[in-house]
Amino acid sequence: MIPSLAPCFTGIFVHYKDALALPGEHSSVIPGRDLLDRNTSENLLARFAEVHAGGDRRAIVSMWTQWHFGALIIPTTAAMLLLGRDLHVDLERISLAVDGKGKTTAIVLPNDEIPAISVSEGCFSRLFQNHVEPLIRHFVAQFKVSPRLLWNNATDIFEWALDQAEAIGTVRSDALHEGRSLLCTRLRTNGQSNPMYGLVRHVKQGDITVRQRKLCCLRYLLPGVACCGSICPSPPANAGN
Image 1 (cartoon, helix red, strand yellow):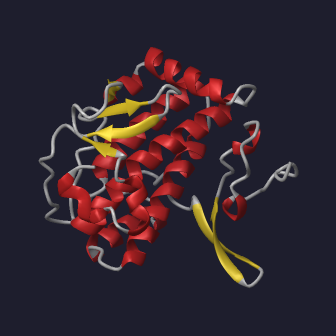
Image 2 (cartoon, one colour):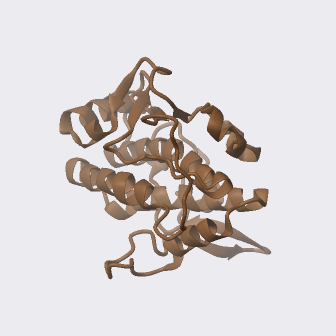
């Protein structure tokens, strides 16, 4: 855990305290920019596929990105909302700690000099425009998966992190508003379509309202991996098998 960020790893976020690291903390590290290299990403996904032998290729890619986005988005969002800290998580600036299964275990920041945000507008641009978006674009081209599938993975994790931070009760309200606006605005400020819009919904199931993805993450196509429950928009018939 990075000492200066320790205060944000409270409540549910304590489980993500080791998802951020500094240089020298991990032995198996690759530059973040190498995720955009075909050989590197193919190697990582091939190693990850061995864990899910016989699994559908699309589902393997989807599951890998869920692990990666969890390590990336959750602590980055917590640091922004609870501490007002703008982490340098641009692909060009970070490194990745990966395990023997090709899975991201930590985002290695360039240093512990983490600036505070002065204004909330665009405060998540490093995260989404400089990391998530180029990674999704590359994976879509290389692995022939749906961009909306991968954006739904990122959006689901991001909204969950916003909800958890808000529940703690000491968030920066301006940054929280900026985060929420990314989920409910059809167009970006440049007029382009917002790829996160509408990908997480809140629907009635009986007497309760539940969060639900727009698209299934396909995890049911991985042998031995359980369905994700009520958040799935279309639980497969064999989900309980």
